Image (cartoon, rainbow, N blue to C red; front, side):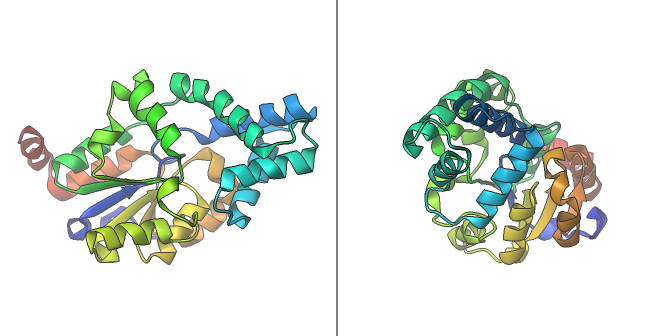
Length: 257
């Protein structure tokens, strides 16, 4: 793994952010949602860690075109849930999560400052996520806590969602789509990712990846460390790096302009 000072930031043009666990603190919410589903409809009390291990394993190994519908079918089959229609269970899952996402979801510390700084410096910003359009609308239109800090739909120059690609991470399709869209060279791009599958997708696309620490990825920490180009525990580290490259005065002029 390289240190940030080794990065040729001025050679980058396109800065790409994953969403869940990278831009926002959301992984723990999905653990709570799935724990509740299995308990209420299957009578099985799983720990949050068990829930995450189970979901991560399924999502990593399954290549279904509708991955979350397939996941609901898997839950019904494995735990004998008393909802027998995967589509119905998926709707319940969205209903439970919607209220939580609208009320409690927030950006990770210091990421809004970094994004606005990068925007002011002229970088093209892209959101590349397996999040659905329904969830994105919650974050960008209904979650007042997030809207008061930054409007996702306005700040990002391009948003690639689950509906825009056929294959999920670690397949590099989502990142290859961005490279093709801008006719870019992978060396001109930089990705921020929290998870092993996300970092792996970036590797497969030939793009440098900054791993953003998220406690919910600790189970795969050693694998992440082995393949990530750079690592930060907090976005303030990257803000400091940007300031060291461009200088605070340059940023202030860019922001005023």
